[in-house]
Image (tube, rainbow, N blue to C red; front, top):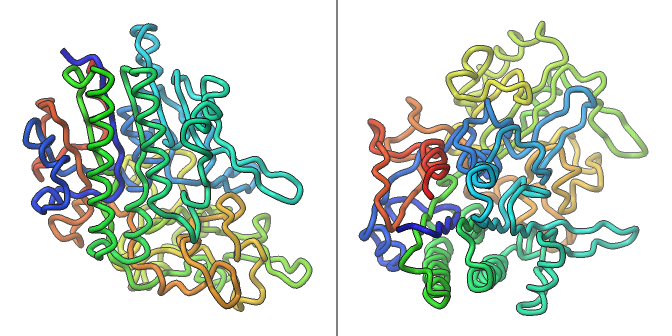
Length: 446
């Protein structure tokens, strides 16, 4: 009888990895139960996929249409905001609390979990002081992060994102996961293992660095399994391992806001000696996120013209407007008026300046909240200038595109799901499971 469910989110896993010698532990789980390609929701980015997995709903219902969006009423771009209240539907811990108050949930390092209804939470929440940033993690119960720090040391935010991002982040999260399992034996446990994400973006999906990181991911799963054995819950535990998305190798970026500026649609204001986006008087601005971009318009009168401009760009694959959003389950008020998808070998940069010297100073820093779009170049460092570079050719891997598009190869775009117990979930015509389908299954698993 299943009494415990442990979900391990390992970014970048694909079903083909089971056929190699890299994942003996995960392969053994799959052989015992089931494994499948997994169809992510669109866009295939962290916050969106995680929310769909946890709620069993598509973005048009839960509202997390990307890792960021523009607040139309204030012209503010909100990126990587952690608040649980941004999710507009119940998630697994909300269903559990209505079902059985005695069941305990734990979630470590998933997005939009700040102040969530889970019993145990750890999520990064650095404190910005006048002249420094103090590393800290929000936790529930109050003081739980500090309790773990006494056991394994502080979490190093620089290992989680930025030029120093590394497998050290996964090591710390693994130890925190083991501590939580052994101390609390939660009925539902969700943990996030990020390190493959860094190597896939820096070196490409089939690089030696990714292979090495897959081996580490497998050893992490083994450690977590060992903790369930130590806690004497192994026999009653279902392990679910999934990947939010697979990667595409890329060789250049589309500067979509510069395209809008070139066509008189995006305005800037010069403040001091730098250029800032003039959101008030711009007719359009694109909030980019990996291989997708949400374009917000001041007036729909410009929509047809902008679509025609974008159609002339050979690096853009798909342009989504109006009723087409419903097909992609992205018809939500937070979504852009136009949503564009890059070719499989391209990604979107957020840049709006013509000359590097005009770029605001925060664009040279690791600054995930002030940048009005995702900046993967924060994973690199310009060693001469000692800042984040603007060389978009550095990035080798990206993601976000929908699967099953005419321009996709058959296996591209799918991620990965496996469990040590057969769930009898019905697969689609492409022999894959939908992440939303898995989320619905989770609601009734115990």
